[in-house]
Length: 332
Ligand code: PEP
Ligand code: MN
Image (cartoon, rainbow, N blue to C red; front, side, top):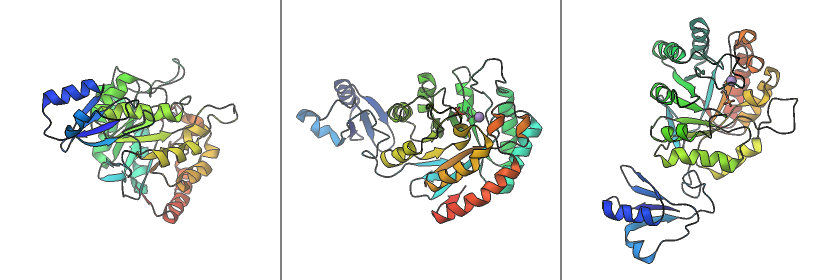
């Protein structure tokens, strides 16, 4: 259950209600919100005078549910917004990893010339092998900071673990929590304590319930700016890296109040399939696309096989614009 209490509820009463309903409390400027385990289905008669509104749920998808907020939440990224009544679609591109000043400058110039608003690049990389490139770490954030200042782009970059979570949250315009980190409660709870937008990627072995519950950790910490990203799940299929779950995307659109972004690059794993998938994703009328683009994919130090070069992305971009127009969305 979600309970909205009167803003002037006194502290002793608030504590009594929170204890009784085993609730998490969020206090914002307008209201006090208690979120109880979903097994609570009603409130005691004696508590009714203190409760303005009650929302009841079948399961622990609560703050993210359309049953709570019918309309999609708005998330502000730099000067732009996605979700809400905005018909924007965020196309966030860039290399998998920040690798050098030259590489990230070329990427930023490309993004800027296309008129896009964000550059996405990872500096703390959650790799599958400890023997491969792990990212430039703090040095990469410094390179990204220079780019942000020079080109005025918003930076999307990922947090891998607790060793640098505060640093990335303080630095990023959008904090990406990757597929392998989305179960890390330390990261999720810290993301709940900021108001920066969080791009939460679905784990490749995570069902939709678990995925949205991970978002609930952030929302129940008090951060309303959560974006869900489907990036492919592991199935029996081995010819492609993962399987992009577009049915899952349809479910998230219908049942959650969070903006949804699709990532065809990590799902496919091979550049040849990315343009077709990206067009299919855009046609799903979601809030964004995440596509890996590198000035020289063959030389990329991570995810080389799936990154588009600038020429390939430009060709794709022309067709994405047409689809965006057809579904009445503006690419940002
Ligand atoms: C990435 O975005 O570069 C990445 C590591 O993605 P994922 O967490 O989805 O594997
Ligand atoms: Mn990658």
